[in-house]
Image (cartoon, rainbow, N blue to C red; front, side):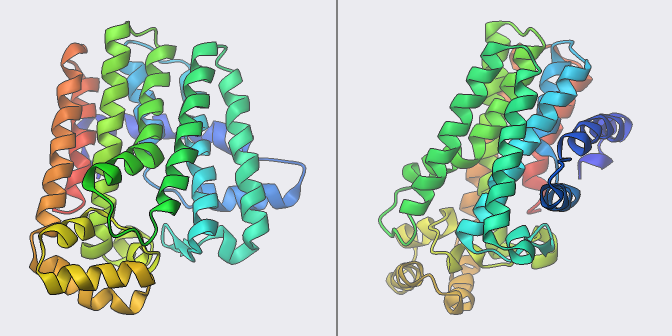
Length: 324
C-alpha cells in the first residue's frame, strides 16, 4: 500500500486532507439528495490514485499551491461520476466493499447525481484559469465516454483482439490517469517534453492498473477488490485473461469461455476460473501489466531525479503489488 512507502508516509495524509477539503465543500448542494448520495459515494474512500498522480505531477516540476489540490479533487469527481454511471450500466450492487449508490438510492438518482459531480468537476476546472486544462479535460472526458460505449459494444464479443482490448482500457480507464498527470504538469509550468512524459506516465500506469483489475476478477476475493468476484464474466466482458484463453487455451477451454461470454452467466464462473488459474492466462496478463509499468517508469527519465520521481516509480510498481 502507498501509505507504507517513505514519501507517502510523510506527505500522503496532508496531501489528501487538502483534496478532501475541496471535495467536501464541492459535494454540498441545496438539494439534499445530491449531498446525501455524493457524500456516500465519496466517503467510500478508494485509492485516490488519480488525484495523487495530479499532485505528484505538479510537485515534480516544482509546483505546490491550492489550485493543484482543487484540480486533484476535480479528477476524483470525474472518476466518481463515471463510477456512479458504470454501476447503473453494469447493474452492480457492490463497490469498494459497500452497496452501490444505485442499489441504495435507485438508478435514476445515481445517474443524476453522477451528472452533478461531473458538472461540478468542470466548475473546478474553470477555477484553474487555464484554457489548456479545460481543453485537456474536455477531450479526456469525451474519450472516456467513447471507451465506455466501446466496452458496451464488446459485451459478449468473442472475436475481440488483444489490441482492441487495450484500446478499450486505454480509453475508458487509462485516459483519466493520463489527463490527471497532464493537468498537474500544465499547472506546474512543465516544459513540453516534461508534460508529454508525465502524460505518457499516466497512460501507462492506468493501463497496468486496469489489466491488474481484470486479473483480480479471477484471482482476488470480494473483500480485497471491493466488488463481487466474477462480475466481468457475469457481464460478458472479454478481459485479457479470457482473451488469452480463447487464443491459447485448449479447444474445450476456448469454447467454454466463448459460451460463457456470449451468455453472460455467472454460473459458468467456477469452470472458467478453473481454466484461468490452470493456464498461463494470469501470468501472461501480469507480464503485460509489468511491461506497461516499465514504460511508465522509463517516462520519468526526463524529469528531475528527486523524492517525487522516486514516489512516482513506487506508485507505478504498486499496481503490480496487488497480485503478489
